[in-house]
Amino acid sequence: MAQDSPHISVLLNEVIRSISPLEGRHVVDGTFGAGGYSRAFLQAGARVTGIDRDPNVLPYAQNLSAEFGDDFRFVQGRFADLEDLAQENNIAPIDAVVLDIGVSSMQLDEGERGFSFMRDGPLDMRMEQSGESAADLVNERDEREISDILFELGEERRARQIASAIVAQRDEKPFETTAELAELIGEKLGRKPGGSHPATKSFQALRIAVNAEYGQLVRGLFAAERLLPAGGVLAVVSFHSVEDRIVKRFFKPQEKGSRHAPMQTKNLLPWDNISKAIRAGKDELDANPRARSATLRFATRNSEPARELSIEGLGVPGYARREFAS
Image (cartoon, rainbow, N blue to C red; front, side, top):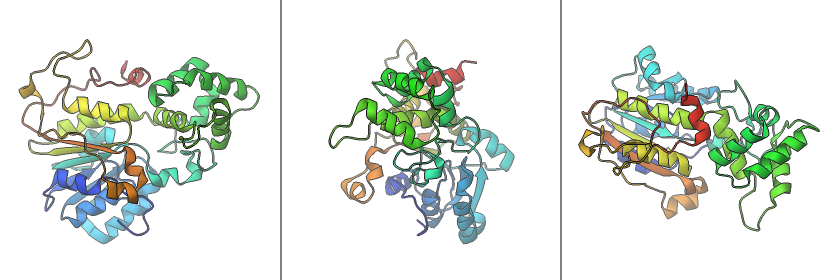
């Protein structure tokens, strides 16, 4: 990675192996960030198109453009819109798509972005820096909806207690900063010695809601399925059990079926060589604690037709399912 990059790409060697060989191939880095994956792919001889919704990544993209010339290009946008971006920017044909889901260390370390309770700043969390913020959610949504967000998107068991406290406090003074919200949650839940901060799951849930991350993930997976030719590879790094569940079931729907997803014949699925979950080894964990929760899954596209977009059987939480209702 570039020495001025504030972000260490997790499972980098494993991702490279999953989409190798790279020489002469075209890789879409759908979550460009600070460019760690893109740089590694370029150094291995690939051509790379980087995509990101966060305008703050532009300096990193410009650095790669200056260094690698026509082998690298950057497109501002959401990886969920990969199909439209590919058509508008003449991106295809594509040999591999790589997605690193969630928030980057770069975003977490910028207090003014409001992603982390570790640094006081505006309660924002918007990757694109537009639209509804986390402050808007906690100050304007009703208690039931806040509770649903915290429980379904963050798996926070004490969601009702937190939501009730949020509504009671905002009646006196609306929330404006990350510190105000983190302090309230800490006071209500307490903190066990050696445990994670009690606001961890709530902040994660709010970030996911603000950026519609589960919906973006589902749309991005199906877009990659439609764009990749037979032999193309899709590799996804996730950092949360719900994200990983979605990716796992996308590649290989439950063979026994369920009330949500009927049984599918294995040879009709559009993916082969589906990997098991791959996680960081001890050396990487020692060097980069962020890799602790990272999981890589990848698969190779075959010649079966792409499926219609559907969230059934993927384990998308109820709150996130709302954006697919219409």
